[in-house]
Image (cartoon, rainbow, N blue to C red; front, top):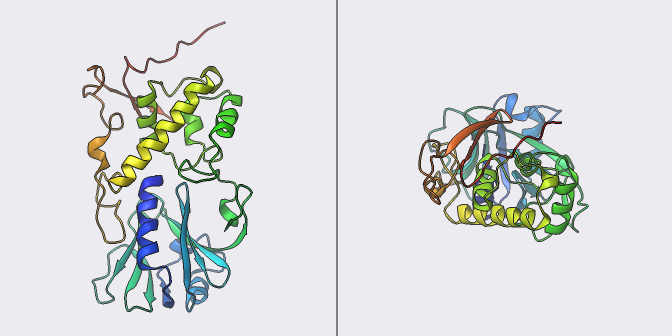
Length: 289
């Protein structure tokens, strides 16, 4: 699933090519892409026809466009969602689920091979963390580390109050948003922490260091266009990122740790793979009563 850097790459593309443009016609192809919009696909297409895109914004992994009618179009990328800006006569992609004719004679398309993503038109509401308005459906999502309003000390306090695994806390979007499996593993490797360490057993200084590494690794990934393991993670021009070449932990099971030379391991964690170095990141001992 795309994480913060990949979604930010898409947001920047939308900001460059779509913001300021009027949607002359919106065509929603099928009910599944509009399943979060209660009125259905035809009503969604009608509501989006004639509106102007005023801004492209993001919090964590959530992307939305502010519209000039006071609402927001939330784009759920899911596992494989793409926003592509193309010429209207370009061949339609096999998994294209929505097309928006723009007033500059180009077309914005929503393509989603695995169909976990979708589009949703929602109202804007006051953000409790800033002066901005945000979509009502993401008000429960915490600020991400790249936002100016991100509160490192407050996030560390909330993490350490929880008696939970540190990686689980990193993935909790109500604590800190935008960090997924890939960048959690990278940040833990850089901090020399095992993901099963308990948050209330990790010092505030180490937790702060961990969030700092998470921020840094996502900035580095963003500078390389994100992490692309296949053709599904692309920007609006269809180009893939290449940060996967710089990963130190994720996906490197059986390969030498770039720090100590030990063989990296893969363990099951929350129904997904978790990658770490057994020497640099020792598993915490279980104290039995």
